[in-house]
Length: 609
Image (cartoon, rainbow, N blue to C red):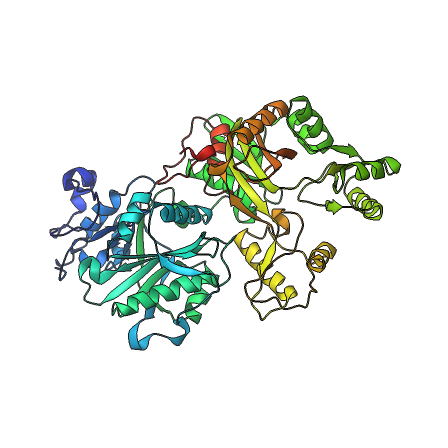
């Protein structure tokens, strides 16, 4: 072992590491099953035992190792919370067969894109208006990259490692920056020649991902083609990537761009991060769970808590750890009392309790269907009409200004609940704050569904495309309905549904920011003003509820002004990444368990880490 590029790679004594397995080690140092002969020793050309720290884990270049036991030792030294990957190992199945309780073959496929003269035309540079693909520069970029990783369920990385790596020629760490200055995508390239003088003159790409809330269509392809261009400029012969076999959408994209499949396999260590990849099966009904129940099941299983799906459609789980069993329905659990739940269920009751607690709420009244309703409209101006009980934005009308519109809005709301609430319309951003165990865990601004023109497709097609993207990003939970409200919003903006929007033109197509109707959610926890955080905790205590999602209207999350709109007794914990909503929920349910270690954590309320 004459060279290692890892930062902090552990070198453990063979006798201590192998322990009872000593009798299975052959003369060459490789693990050997009983009754089999070891392979002859192979000396790789160039540097040996090359390991590269990527922050989220290490890349173990198997072709540089001449002893399989050395690979095993490296994988066994994997850091807590990390995800190491061994690629290009000769006979990976042999190593796994000898250590099946510790290692597994990753269920992924390896694809290769030829570069240089053999590079397919489909991977030529892709330009997207307002989008710039550039190298990662600093800690702010690295924080943004980690947020995208977390939002997509990927392992995060220490900021300092990402920044340091980006400053070397071994890495090509690129980000996609939108015209707003926001980082909306990322990709990491590894130059094998710079790492270990690869005689095959190759490279690989890792962690290609985008923020599906903000990235324009084609961002992933733009990142990929820019990386290919830069590797081409370095004279590399090919770039490889590894993709899960179940990711059919990504595979179709890679094949369309000219990638071809190779026989390379990856080896990983069994750990909580990889658990779903090597366990025989998830609990019965797991695959039918919606994202809001699945995020709870995943966090529980990572901690070794037994998960039983009692009703997949309902999102109901039975969680057991030792002698403690708790039934949950998404984020609603037996710890929430029936009284607390009923207080949130009826918006009129919620208003009364919060008002008595001194919390700011908009002026409002229960609709009576007579002249008093119109008098209230005349007094306060534009109003919001909504069912007193209900969820997911059903039956809500925003911006009612006339007597005729008020009558129609009340009739619509009564289709969902006989009792209807009329509230003054307050301007501001739609803010959702998650409070667990009377502590603010996450805050996010929710924005109505919008589309971006491309100068080619009409509004109807753009809505359909954006709806498909939202559905894919949320497990089918978010879609943009093409209904009367959508048509009205488009018409109010001066357009028809068959109009072709100019390239780059952004058009909102819904009034409400509800996630289920295509709205997007953007984490603002670090920006949350202390006054708002304090008010949210006071509201949760007044309602006496351990888990709640509080909806507010604010001029901006970092300003103290606010009004409460409603409280949700079963808030969705998904879509608040990178904040640890599921972790804190399971902490509440099973305080004796511990969440898996994170390599990076986002700033909490007020920017406190």
